[in-house]
Length: 245
Image (cartoon, rainbow, N blue to C red; front, side, top):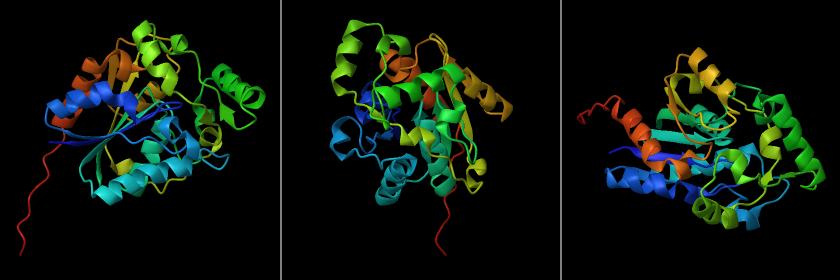
């Protein structure tokens, strides 16, 4: 059994992993999918002060309070930044990082720095003009590759604006994260905003898996994604058991 912690991206909540989580649990795995502060059902906690550090602390505290070990920590999209920072702070608890169409940031980099220039400009403009200077409005789901009406109807009522501060805050890393193995999963059937991040992963020597689906793989290809995640977990080394002296 593996302990998975699945971290959602912008606008979403932990519920977006439901279709993947049910499959992983059916295979015998433990799954946690927290909703980050200020988003979806926790939108009542949103303030202009919510930033990357807030979301990193959300996940660090989950790991600490539940005493999780040998965790497969999965981050979608924006949450690549969260995964990197959490693994840097708790390298002993994380067995594997997985970046699902996500940012692969280095020390000192903000998420906005990692977006293609045209996309970054659109996000910054949206925050300034429609988000009161501190919120990124929800993007059209069709842009993200969600086309089935049932999926659109399931997602739309639950999505909420995302704090822009999480995209402008810079990663602060000690370097401990470099000792935590990582893999990348790229969703290739959309505009491929994260193709450059997949290239970064390859340059780091990480395995890169491709899924023929849009950006919202946990919604549009849950069976395939669960299979990839379970396969990554299966390849992890088995922890050695030490007898107490």
